[in-house]
Image (cartoon, rainbow, N blue to C red; front, side, top):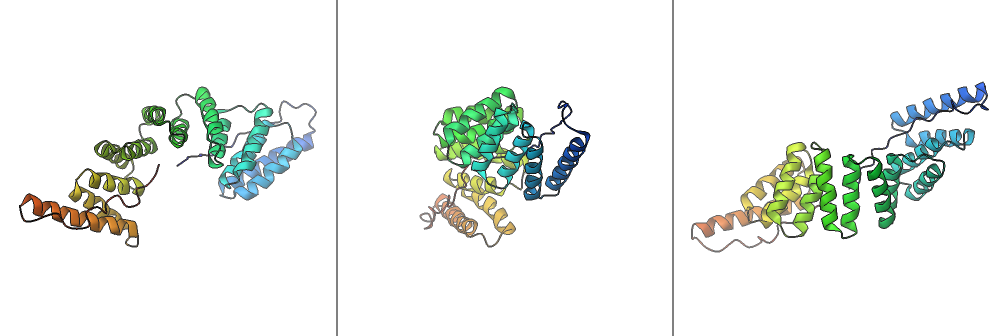
Length: 271
């Protein structure tokens, strides 16, 4: 789960003395139009306008960066990498460049290159929680879980109202079989954002695996009332209900657990 948070850079031709007044006016008009198109949710049109701007000012690194950011939004990751690399060669060395190129590298499976870019972004902006979160995601995919935990914990420290690092920490501990620790992280996510349905689904699974069947049922019931067509939720709702009933009978000395209590955890949401 990567967060791009595209940030368009404001480029300027004020330091280019050979630009004519007509070119300056056209440049400013195109840039304003491109930013307006992006603000109106039309990245395709914004990209076309930035391509015109790049022709007008081929040495402007911020324009190349903006093309890359828009290509990220459009899911054209390899082209985005090329645009960001062009921006880097032109001296546009912001943390946003390395952050977003890190996303593009990760989305194209180039995880070691992605991590290098996240490390460069982190060096430039050491307290940015989104950089630290995305760095952690890449580290998990590389199998470096302890370093990923450190990155997520730093993201949590610098972004106390940012739910994603807690979600990823919950997923790490769930995958390690430490279900009660996972429960606490998923609950932390929902304290920040109670509409984070994947965190609630995973919380239900973690509670089930921890033997808290009634509490798991309650979480799945919330999700079922929100989306009655979700078959994974319906499956886990039924499994946790059966397990809770079986546990109650067992506690009362009335028989064995009900069949089907191994169904919890269906479709655990990945980080």
